[in-house]
Image 1 (cartoon, rainbow, N blue to C red):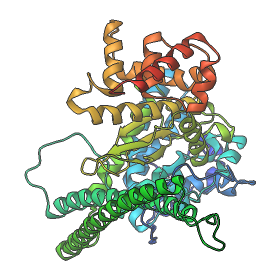
Image 2: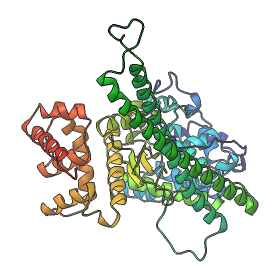
Image 3: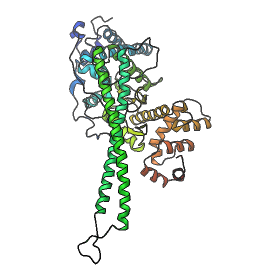
Image 4: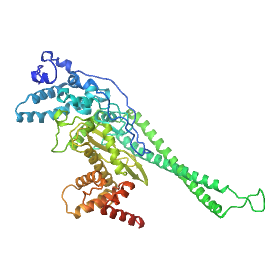
Length: 537
């Protein structure tokens, strides 16, 4: 255990004098404070990402060079911080590679215990050093270079962009206040669900119905406005009369074209009448859903408070985030959970900041317009998933879940992106590929090997007699589709390219350009034309 003395080399590394070793009770003390967060809602009317006007701050904040930073991180975390501090000292001071490896393996779980302790205090508020430890994995300033500290210090800290992209501390805060439902985990048998849990599930289902009705009404209102403009133009044309030959100041009867307008006007009025009935019915269903949600929320308050979230829920979510991080890193990756200068790039544009990741997703969506589109009961909406940015050296992003279990209509999925990958673009593209695959698979359900995107790709996969995980092959092909095939560079197999051309289509303008650049794309384009002329396309 911690003896109260710091090794001179460690003290030098931490930029503190060994004679000024703080008392351990002063180093680890509790902190508090309460902050409120606004509710995060799905806006299904959005058609694209918010523009990014600023990618980073002009000047770094000085906090990341503070000598008291490390002390502030560990203060108040009691036994877990004592063990971590001791192991970190031994790890950094070890000379023998085997001994260093041993301490490294013990240091990783010790760090996660400290992080879990910090995360548990999120509802009551945590200090900035603790927050940035969870957010960036930034622990000890002297473990990173001056240039790296300046880059991290330039990251925009506040969430100024209205998009569902969150750093770990922000995500856990949303979960802790019940503003976002906890992430799904593997199903286990429960003796009995709590009353609040049942109410939460009912509210989620009704929220999906409510959002779907809102989307339907908005789409129908657009149709109504277009039809009304058409009706106005036809009536305007109908009121134009020539003079009757031989009779001054007397209007001539309708022309043959105007008589046709009479029939058109009747059809438009009939369409508007039917549309009006549909909108009226949708409003009735919407009001019912809103009233039921209100009643259930009131019941939840009576049964025990406004929040569905307990300390165990927050603990479970933190463990889920830890599992997400492991998946981003992979079995053979670097699982060290805090920053050291030799493991990540100094350029801020290479880091997975919120702004950089949004920019990468926007570029992917420009090539794959259907990436975030979801059709439910014949209503298609653009629903961007929650994106959780984890402090890890992972090589790829992942999709944790395509949408929430109890709200398939309008709920967001959950995508995880490592903040310090080798290649940020590839990490984001792999996450988009995983999302594409899982949404298509859930849509096809039991027929995922036969129907839609996953079915066609699986059939090609088996025809080629490949072995391994079919989803992994799909992700690699999706990366090629976005990075190479979109530029006309043919890197994919002919069969998989055909699947992507049909089920992960480029925008029409790009397809038109590609068909003019090569025989392969022109043949795919001709097949599109033939299918569009036949039934069942």
